[in-house]
Each structure stands twice: as structure tokens, then as C-alpha cells.
Image (cartoon, rainbow, N blue to C red; front, side):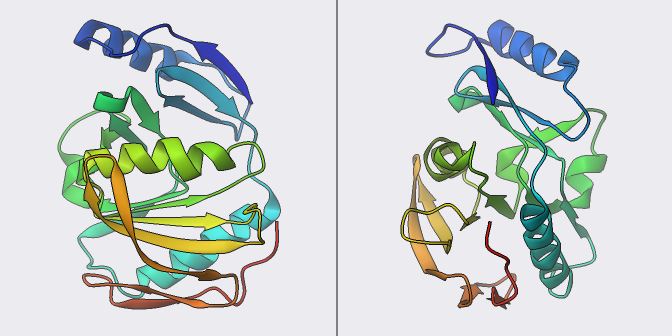
Length: 197
């Protein structure tokens, strides 16, 4: 992963706009993910086959339970200006009207109903800590972390009830377990087909 460091602890509106402009104009290779994480513009390589397979399995399960007026997006920018962050989650579930409200290529993270991050070797720490804190601070109700690189073996953790920049663990298990997503999803996510990283 490469990074362009921008030196500030809190971005003003002008600095935030400048970071977003850099993010929009970064010419990364096809399939790479460009994000702003705590004021640093990062470029991550394309995800592995296992990563994409897990994303597809979760995507299919979610489409069985979400309302028609919601969508599941794989490359949707989610902005958390208070954490100087603009993330590209692996899956974001959000009302379609939020995306249709105006032009652009990102939404406020707070508009998402569920965010799913699937760790890669190069981004696991960001997904576990920095992005989790950002999504919690933004008030995203549910954050599903699928961590194939967890130290004790692949895990799935569902976080909820955000308060400031912290989530509460709602459910957790290893690959193979069922993870219960509460309403409005009401889904027992079967992780038995998740491939190891």
C-alpha cells in the first residue's frame, strides 16, 4: 500500500475539499482502491479472489432481505470528514435516494445502514481500528468486519450501537459460524462457504 501524507490533525473545510480533490484525481491502476484514512490518501492493490468470493456471498445474502429502495454498493465512497476519512468499503448498504440526491461519487457515511469490510493482508489494521472508529463516529448503525487475517484465525464480527468512536460487539464467530444481523435485516449470515484468505 502506498500513501500520500497530508499533515494535519483536524481538516478545515478548505483542507477537506483539497483532500477530496486529491482523492478524486488520483490515477491508480485498474482495480486499486484509493481511500483517505485519517488525512492520508492511500492506494491499496486489487482484492484477492477469496476476498471477492466472500463479498459476493455476503452480497447475495443481503439482497434476500433488504427493502427494494435500498442498494448494495461495492465501490461507494463513504465520507467521514470529522475523522479526515473517505473510505471505500467492500459493501455499503444505503437507501437509493441518498445516491440519487445529487451528483458526486461519495455519500456521508452516516447515510449507510450497514458497512461491510473484508480485510486484506495490507489493510487489516485499518479495517479493525481506524475505519471502525470512523464508521462508529459517523453513526453507521451496523459494521460487519470479516477478518480473514485475524491473529487467531479467520473471524467475523458484527458491531453496532455506535457511541462516539466506539462500537459494541453484537455477534462474533469464526468462519463457518452463523452471524445474526438484527432488524431491519433479520438475517442469520451463513459464513460456512467463506474461503480462507
